[in-house]
Amino acid sequence: TTPQGVDFNLDEFSLSEAAKVSAQTVAGSWGGKDTDKISDIGSDFWSNLGKEAGSAFTEEDRELLRLVFNPHLSDRRLEEERFVVPDTSSSHVSKLRNLVK
Picture 1 (cartoon, rainbow, N blue to C red):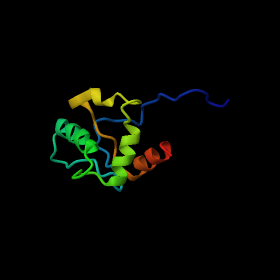
Picture 2: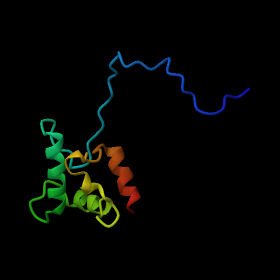
Picture 3: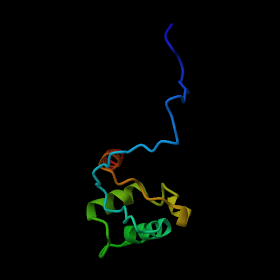
């Protein structure tokens, strides 16, 4: 018989072993630095998104993020310091760009 449904077998899963994950190419200019505190990254993100001049984001990224986080469609600003910026990996940014086309 053919297996059906979802396989929840966790025999191969282990939290005791660290697995090295390959780094992806960074495509977004909004990720912050490794030394930034998460709460600072969130507040800096919204501040830079609103700037026309002097933003840390590239113009292309700022336009993308304004479309994704349109205040009429998104309530993510209400998360304040709990907000976590979107993944900046090349594959994720590409998916975001395709979603807003």
